[in-house]
Amino acid sequence: MEAVKDVIDRGLVSGLSSSNQFSAVVWSVPRMPVGPYSKIDSLPVTIEDGSTNEADYVFFFGKSGKTKTWEVFSCMKWRDGHWEFVPVKLPNAPKK
Image 1 (tube, helix red, strand yellow):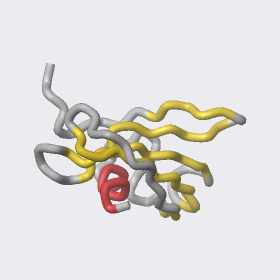
Image 2 (cartoon, one colour):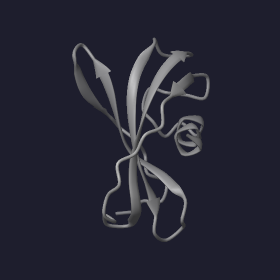
Image 3 (cartoon, helix red, strand yellow):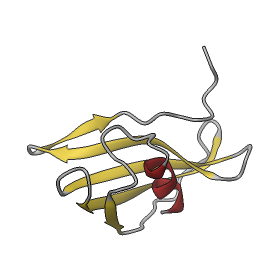
């Protein structure tokens, strides 16, 4: 949850800000290491108060093989009966 709160507080998730309050249920599925990450998990979150209306999100994050910290790399929002992609800025992404 710390990684999710950090990207929200830093304004890296489109449409969410540090004024949002959320609750979450932590669950994970074991996976093989993928790309730069040694682990990949997801975190369902309900935004309860703040600059957006109440909504359900799922954050996808990986544990960096290099820095050993959790990094949020993707987000989806439940809207009108389907999941929509929410842009997430990757602070450590290579510059083009």
